[in-house]
Image (cartoon, rainbow, N blue to C red; front, side, top):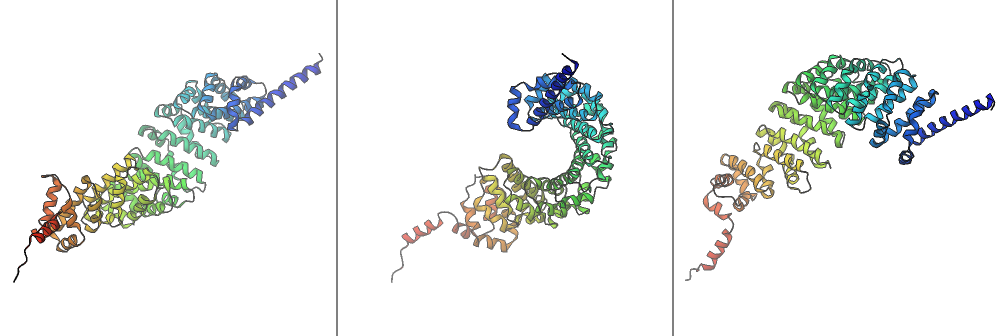
Length: 509
């Protein structure tokens, strides 16, 4: 065989390998092909091509493996069991930027599925190499490495700590300062994934100077970057008062309130979450939010969106109101109660209704004035129906009951209580009757209205255990009226009158 023929054979072999990896990489982009590729044993065919002498074949083989591993955890598991990871890690340090991106993509695709698969990446020594890639001159390599590190860190505190111990945080903080928007996004996302697990991990992110750089990007025009920045700041702020105060000290207000009006729904949601995580800690932090116009801005935001986007804002109002009478009044003055009542009535999801019920309970529990502000929006019958509905989730029933109880124990606005006399079950009725027993002895107008509206008649129909708290309340109410009035409205009294008619002998001349 001539030299020319030998070269032709090698050319054909190279062309066949190139076509094969390109075809597999292409087929792996469509979910309907995955099972067929898996059954054909494609993993074992791709593995030797990671060591191919031709760089483009290596890169395309890695890309194909990444796409397969990204699809489901079975295929990711096959990458681990096929002993492919050590080869990828070795090549990650040695090869060109195209290969590095493809190899980091495979590590990310494997690591995203479960803590066990992410741990397999850690065990094969990938973290040190990925951290080195964060210093690469090519922004795409940095991005791919940051993405893989974030996917490993997001599972739990142990994996996150491993990423920290490998020295990733200072380099991720440098990455958020790079000019490329995509790199900023991924680095901010990775910092968020690290910070979320514990105060200690969040503190390591803070100690690297991340807060100031993140805070500067709150008003960046790129919506996806804003999402990640707001998420990272909220994952830091959620853990403790100290961390929340550090975030506030970076002068995120009033800039973060601008994000509540953003066109991007997830920017709105993440901004709401950040404000919620700050508000929950102390009355002082909540007061700061009130002072910057944060409560009014949040109420407007809740009114402008639907569903889960609303949820953190609803909870934030509840946290603010829970701290003190004055803060709850700030929510009332900003017209928060009607907006929460709308959420309670119109949201289809039980967990959002439950959050609105909880928030309304936190507002109404302070004083009669607070309770009245909630009661006049016709919220109590809605809460009662949610509590009594068999279709409501257990959490919604519990939160609705607690909210009713909180509001009723302070509510002296009797017109709002009256409908509950007719509909409430005994365990709620005692709170309703209890409020009437407190108000009626001191209000003659209310006593008259209670008779004409049918309230007194309804009270006589209530069956209470002798000696119970409910019976005591009923006795207190009955003592507000002449005995003959009480008797007149008691069940069976009309029968007694009719009997007297029957037995009455008219006087004859």
